[in-house]
Image (cartoon, rainbow, N blue to C red; front, side, top):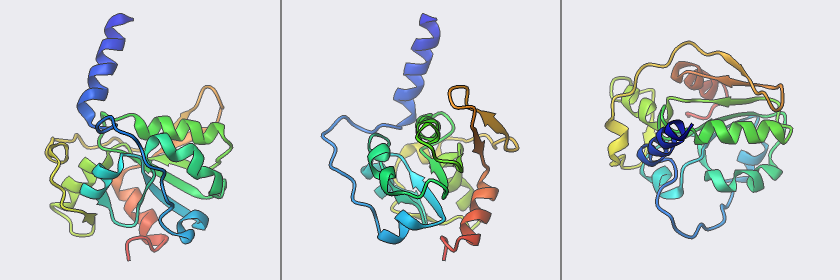
Length: 178
């Protein structure tokens, strides 16, 4: 158990999920439209990482502020969460919390910003906004397996895991990439 805890702590430190320790400013919701949108793509990294690189059409609500911000969200909206890469568990943890709070259509894009950035290097339809200077963006990301429904043991609700292709399709349908 100690070894598992040690490995988990190491992964958290390496993935860049939480950024530096500093006082966090409250998040201002990007626009009122984002609050009532039928599809929201939410980057749960800190503002500095979001400003460096994010998926076009996504909004930034840092992990520690999602529960407060989500009080204004439609619980039936499709909410897709992402963080830095496959080693970062922040988006999965936030998804679990949202489902426990009563949200009914929550998904996680586990490939995160690194996978989206790398695909975007070959396919211009995967648009990244920001200077994208962080090193984690260039770390090799293994292709994600086909999506699966994962049962959340504490809520018995499913949290869908989606691929970059599925996320791009969803965002196009919701006109978030325009």
